[in-house]
Image (cartoon, rainbow, N blue to C red):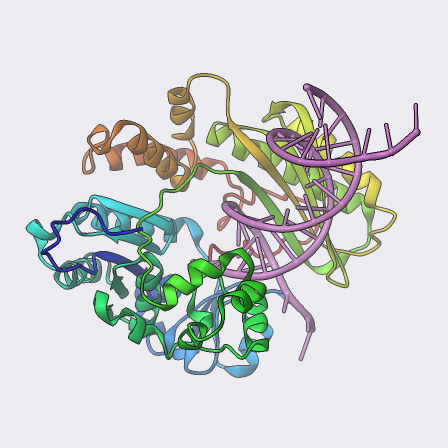
Length: 434
DNA sequence: TCTGGGGTCCTAGGACCC
DNA sequence: TCTGGGGTCCTAGGACCC
């Protein structure tokens, strides 16, 4: 892929930015409670099997990282402050952040609550160079929300993301087109999104630890180690990658799961729990304006082995009753082999828009949570163009309704998507969002 | 006191059809 | 009385991301 027909004379602009909020959940909690300033703070589950969802920078200097078991984090910092997640709160702040980005840049791809890609090549005339735009965005987020963020910039999306990580905390790093390969060469391959522990192992076996070393490996060797991703990773390494913004496809699945602090040994308790989950998933489907064709039961045994069992329906549904039947039938087939259950989950995949016109299902989605509302707006924008929905007056007004509606549903303070395992077994912490 | 919860994407085998 | 090749759907598992 080449850059657009950009009248050959102009220099190639590193106009793909990646903006990432710094320690998002933890930064919010510290902002809201200044007494936490300077302390090792983590957001996450406090239970026996809790993990860290986000760690403040003082916590990070002690070696604490997200996804770390909470017990390990406590060992590293006995004075650790553990704050339970407030997902709805974070989501509202996320909406505000994305609103700021949308004020300045038309072309945005939000990829999670706390990060987004921006193509600023069209905003130059109005707002200046990528550096100036990044500055403006970070300043506005700091002023309006009191939160730190970092920005990376490049000619490619993958490199912009790597750059933002190098810019943290509270910094900016724009990589010029010509300096891309040089910038990447010394970095470990693990910085590339998509190169996880397994791929790193495979690369280490052929002597590759840095991105620079990737380029010296014969293509065929690299392909054996990485599989079909090899060409893409190679393009990254030599600076020729030009991937721009993607566009978020509509939701493909949705579900809920739960890990118990102590394994469940009573099959009836498991059954009760998964029927509640099925109801909850059905409710999420209806709120989102979806029906599902495939119901998946996920089970993890005490030794960590995980299985999934699915069944596909003749007719798509969003009925809790139907989901419960399916999920219970799947459980009945496995229960004798699953004496101790650590985790159970229910997921609906093969989603389709609920009956009615597409527009109708978009309207249904309005009664869902903020995220769904946003997804619905994204789809509307895709379909009708960016003028179809105005920011400013329309957004907050539309956003008010689901907020009120949402608040009457959950029975637990922190809860929302997880539904209400009322009266049932031990209620674990309500997850997180990272 | 080993490892959460929400997802996406990919692969591979088997069934089934033409 | 043996057997190709292509395509699609379903199921299951695994790697990976935030």
